[in-house]
Amino acid sequence: MFFGGDPFEHFAHGHGGGGGRARRGPAEDVDTTKLYETLGIEKTVDEKEIKKAYRKLAVKHHPDKGGDEHKFKEINAAYEILSDPEKRAKYDKYGLEGLEDGGGPGGASADDLFSMFFGGGRGRRGSAGPRRGEDVNHPIKVSLEDLYNGKTVKLAINRQVLVGEPKMCSTCDGQGVVVELRQIALGMVQQIQRHCHDCEGEGYIAKKKKERKVLEVLVEKGMKHNQKITFRGMADEKPNMEPGNINFIIQEKEHETFKRKGADLLVSKALSLNEALCGFAWIIKHLDGREVVIKSKPGEVIKAEADGGKPFVKIVANEGMPSKGNPFVKGNLYVVFRVDFPSDNELNEEAVKSLKTLLPNPAMEVEYDEETAEIVHLDTADVKNFGKGGVQSHDSAYDSDDEEGGPQGVQCQQS
Ligand SMILES: [Zn+2]
Image (cartoon, rainbow, N blue to C red; front, side, top):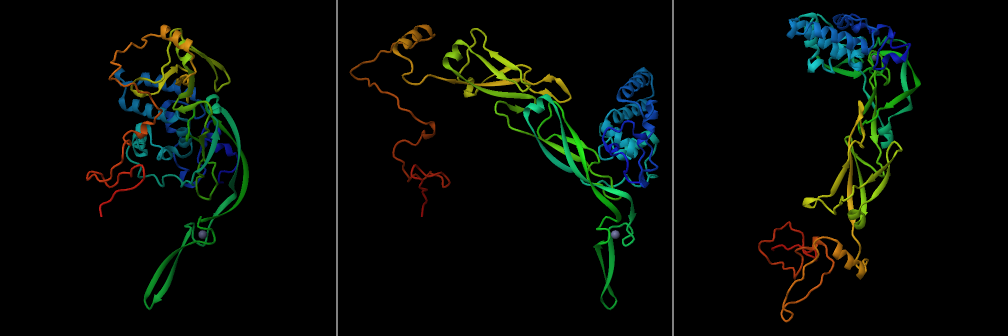
């Protein structure tokens, strides 16, 4: 029987689920109990009990307290696998061999794990688990609000399922390909391998049907752009193959107020010069709907730019995004300020007079000889034009060839 019955058995969290023995030939003889035995627990226990059992044993067998080092390593390896729901589900289904791709504890290979638990290599074991079908990726667009608050989205998928037992294709003996011999000349035979038409290259002939399935996609608080939410084995069922996964890939939508990087958020705020100097209060609607009033402290001055010409930035601590896995630890909210100065003539003479006495460091009187000194005024300008003044000459031998032309856009070339 191929994955008939309860489709939820393929979910990553294989709790309960009748012991999760693999139901297929090659995986039938694998051991899926050794790790549980190592921790002295039943296969049906929950994560809490696993942790409890582990702690007890780890203390008892710790080498610092005279415990056996090998035993201690075994306990740690068993715990590392069983405490991870994904690895545990794989182990329940395919034994240690199923952990081959994911890597074992501390990056140990399946071979290391085998020798750790069974001694020696694993030469006696047959195939390394069934082949796995391709994963299917579906992007899902998620708003920043939903990534902040978390959300469950119900999504319907159409998947191919097998009906009844697939039969091995007799034309190709389950190989998916047939070999034909063709005589191309006397005594010369060409061997051609071609795709088997009877089973469409699958090696098995099975009745298939489409099944509509509603998946509950849990968008966890603090998830990030391009993060995957995996439904193990939910891709199309194919004969003699473990179905691939369906992955929903988070695509964070742009937000009109907040920009996000990691767990930090950033907003921009323009202040008038008056607000920048004399104080301000500003209400933002946070991603969970809260109204947050950002208020300057008495005497706090917001500058037009920070040292080195960088934007002037302050933070509100712990008002960023929740961290995935621990939503109580939040990033920070960065505020980038822009100070809008008054325009020319916006301040009347009286205001200027008062400001001059009120603001620190007023202009000093300068002394000059009225007969010889020249008084000049300023025009508006763009710093990009710096260097473009005067008549542009085109005869300098030092002009490099790839330099953009002057104001006329002419390139100078020697001919
Ligand atoms: Zn065939």
